[in-house]
Structure formats: structure tokens, C-alpha cells
Length: 395
Image (tube, rainbow, N blue to C red; front, side):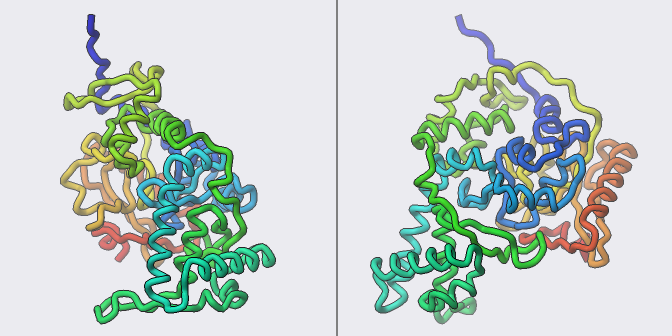
């Protein structure tokens, strides 16, 4: 005898957000590692996002707390992984992410880089490339940490350049060091250390690392199942399409990963079948009303492919760029209700795109804007990917 699927509505999904993603004040954390684990990983392709996303969920927001995890303790590791995007994940999760996702991406990065260098530089072959990499790794070990320029001083071959898109208006001359170091980082053999500037800078120093292939990790199918289970704990109930989009896996691998978990099928408001963990089927009491100012590319905003349950489709053109990158957003009780930006004088400007929550929402957002301005201080934030509303507010 078949049983009806459990039904979980949009209100139930939004009730989970404030708790699981540590956005409601009562659930914020004291440690950056707990924040990263709560959302599986912090987007890191925009360096500022790691700090802004973490501090939005910390009881005492402070960039120094995030830097402790990233650089002092090494308990957060940056990996090129899901959707070929840079994430900062907990060190304990890094082997799982590497096996499930990052190693395959690193292999493709190496193939592409090898073809690019050998095809663009006479006299270079795989043997010479391996020799240059070995020299760069030895120089980095000797220095302890180094910029790309430092390594190019020690290994002059890293200064060799290739002209890309010759004859086009966007023609550029690129040093091979940029691609070589990117691939070594994708493989885990080097790591991004402290940036040369402040916490918003993407100009990193490099430090020695341990190749992801050498880390003890489960085989890829088991690692994908482990990551799928963690993702469902943070983002479920959600669909296979959501997980496929979030990870960048093939549909077959995604289905197999979900099947290898103990997830059960549920029905969402629109009748679509989704998946949830067995201990996540009962309704949850919503937390106290909460507001949040989340940065561009925040992991919560980027957690699902289908977003209608927390984002009105009419707001997408103002909050996303043309490539689908989301800008800074204002949240009220699990829904995106507006956007924000920082002006040149440091003021946090925000605008609500809906009247949800009325005066209570506006007051709570004002409080969060003041909280953000308080810990950001004199730092100026410009998202890597500009969106229409962010540009308008920052002007």
C-alpha cells in the first residue's frame, strides 16, 4: 500500500532558513567554522563575500575572527569546486569536496592549461612545464609564503607570456604564472594565504599545501553521497535539479548521490517532488522575525536553482547581473525583499522592493544596516559582480 508523500510548503522552507543558515539572531554562532559548516561552504570567488557572509551569521561580527579560521588555524580551506567556483569549506569537509568535485575540476584545469601553454609557447612541452612547476614549488617552500611576483623572481620561466585573443579588441598578454599557480591551487599543492591588501582583496600570497589527491578521502561516489547528505541537511527539502545546479555534477551522478543517502521524497507547494532527510519532515516553529543583509554571492541566495519560493521573479533583473550572479540582498523572514550597497562615504544604503513586513521589517533592516556599518568601519566594499540595484544605491 502506497503512502502519500509528506508535504512541505514555502513557509516551512523559509522557517528552516533562519535556523539552519544562522540568520536569525538567536541562532548566530561564535565561530566561523560553524558558519561555514551550516551552509556547507562560503562562496569565495569574491574575497569580500567570505567575510561578509560569515559576519552576517556571527554573534560578534569581526573580520579578525574570519581571518583566524582562514589563515591562523587553517580550519577553512579555499577550493575550486562546485560549479568551478571558489569556496571556503571546513578543513574536515575538504577531502570530501575534493573527491566528489574538486579533483575532476582540477584535472580539466590541468588539461586546458597544458594545451594553452604548449600551444602558445615554442619550446615548452610537458616535461618543461613539470620542471617549472617543481621549481616554483621549491621556491615557495623555501620562502614559506610568496606572491606570484616573488615566485617569478625565483623562477624566471614564470614570466613567459602568451597573447590571448590576438587581433580582438579584448586582446591581452598573460603571464603563464597565472595559469600555473591556478592549477597548482586547484590541485591543492599550494594554498591561498593572506591577501596583500585588506580582507576585500583578491591578490593573495601563496603558501605550500597538500595535494588533494594525497588526502585520505572516500571514493568519489561515496564522497558525492556524503556531500549530498550535508547539502540536504542545510538546504533541503530541495530537488535533484537544485543539487545538480549547486554542485555542477551530471544528472546521473546527482541522482545516484541522492539515492545513496537516506533521503525521502516529499511534495512542495507547486506539486514538484523534492527530497528531504528523514528527520526533517516535521513542521518547524519559525524563529523570531529576522532581517539580514547578505552579500553578493552569499551561499544562502545561491543555494537553489529554483528560487521563486523566496525571491519574487520581478525582482531578478535588479538583483542579478547578466551572468546570473546575485548582488547584495535584504532578507525578511526567509524572503529576499530588497537590496543594499555601500556608498563612497561608507553609508550602507538599502531599498525594499516589497512592503512585506511593513514597519517591523523596515526597522529590523535599519538595525542590521547599522550593525553592518559598525563592523565594516572604514573598509569600502565593491562587489566583484555589479548588479543594477547595487550600482544605483552605491552612486
